[in-house]
Image 1 (spheres, one colour):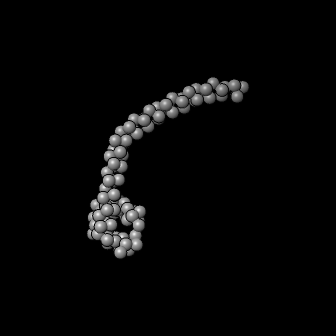
Image 2: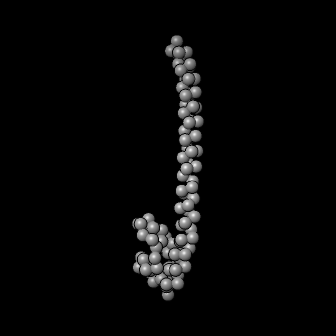
Image 3: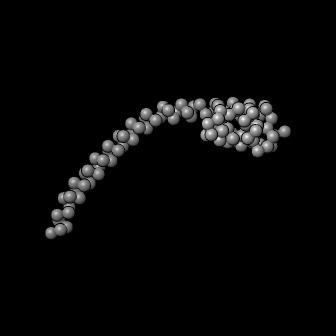
Length: 97
């Protein structure tokens, strides 16, 4: 009955999620380009839910770490720029003489 691959169905699930909809059997079957069996729709939604939840959790946990590491990196870069500006200021009077 089904000519649609699991990857295609997972793509449809991701599209539904991006649109703000929770993928359901009915939505998946109606948005699929070809006929999809109920069994295949259920299996695809199970796969989608098992993959989607860990990714969402990782993004939430990683955001605080990312912010801290980015703040540290910005501080390091600002210090490097300040040092380079000081060196450049010392070189400029020699060029003008």
